[in-house]
Length: 300
Image 1 (cartoon, one colour):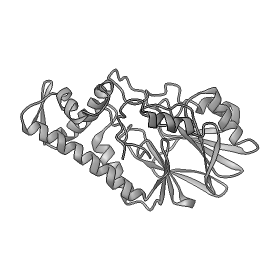
Image 2 (cartoon, rainbow, N blue to C red):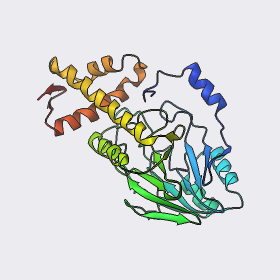
Image 3 (cartoon, rainbow, N blue to C red):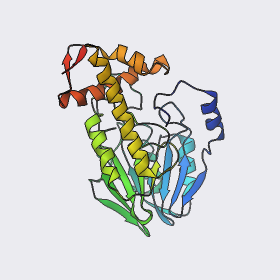
Image 4 (cartoon, rainbow, N blue to C red):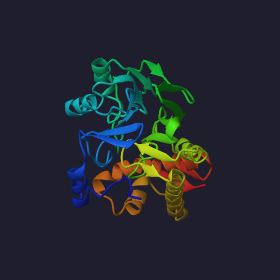
């Protein structure tokens, strides 16, 4: 699995972007289509995957950035159909801003996660929050929206953000996993809103579900999803072990740990990588494994 903090722009990544089917409607299953937004980056991979669920009367999941070309492509993909819902997993700027203009254009209701506004001046490795998100209906865990032949049921999966929802497509035993599980990398868990304990609990929750395929907003569909999730959990436990190994040598600040743990990563991304280390440390502190001493952290 590729790490989240990519080593800058590589020829391989540029080749993927060059081949990406931007603006096209791709059929992924009898009930699922995808339109890819042209917003590639180190945290969106080749771009935001906007999903269309159903036929005739449809829902659009994570409409993406408010980019005119993407708005036109999504509208073209549902031409002649009725859009009943614009469904939002969470309110980062690469997921929800297109909801308002598409609501006006298509007459659909916005449903999904609760609004979230957060002052966060730290170094981010992902997009900020959408200040204009205004849902017509906030869905809580277990609530659903539906149309002819399809049902999308909310699964509360906090961790990446506190308001993050996945959506289960019951008719195909599939899960739209937003950024909780991505098809190309591990997700960002950045305090103060990102919570490592909540993220790990949400991953474990997915292990008990019967989903046979995940549709992440970034990256390809995930087959054998329970096996994939076990890999994500193992990756986080490995990072935790690395941190505890550093602290076994004596108290340390976050930057020198990042320098070692992310030695192969573009230095420009180290401050953001430090947020992930901080999320682990906060979790370990709550479990009594480490203690904070000013700017330093030490084994308990």
